Image 1: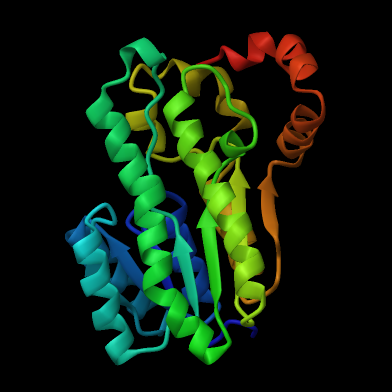
Image 2 (image 1 turned 180 degrees about the vertical axis):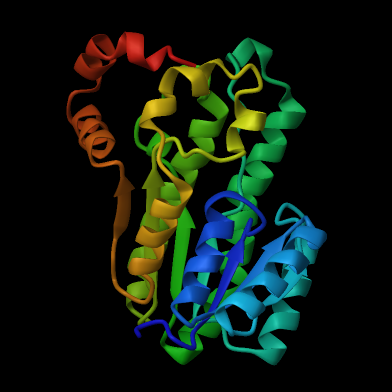
Length: 261
């Protein structure tokens, strides 16, 4: 009932946890607004949501790395609706050793994972401040707390997401706006088709991977609440906290696990 009728914008909504969040908020009678590059997939999702859950569903094609397009899309949305929740979910990763990283690829990760998130947030933030109501949820990662080999650039982007989120949370609290970071471990989604094209990492950790439906439910559970963070799975969250206290010990003990990629 807490989010019933609320209008919830989800970036990266065409697959993975973005797609599952769209279904979950619709199931709870909130109104999903879907943003992603794949317009055909969004159209199919919107039709499915409207027929299955009997709630409206709007969608707009958007590449969050295109700052001009972000500004235009959110300006259009805010002319026609209130935005109660923004979920900055769009993102991707590539797992490579630093000597093999393509700098164009690294630039794209920063544009999508960091600058795109900041642009979407900035586009709705004044609107939420003026209403003294709203919730910004940024999908970060356990990689933002505990980096591992072959994920240097990806981990850097997620550290940036957490830094931005933690700072914004303090600013936004003065205006009645909630800000939450979501830090999942590996999730069984198409993310790894790009991040791990060899398939070796997924093969090594498959039994530990989170289900996207479970992550989506946890995120929707905290919408319009002052939750600081969502951390999944619990054992990995404990590991990342331990890492912050005694990093050298964790790196030594968990070295073999870190090199699973």
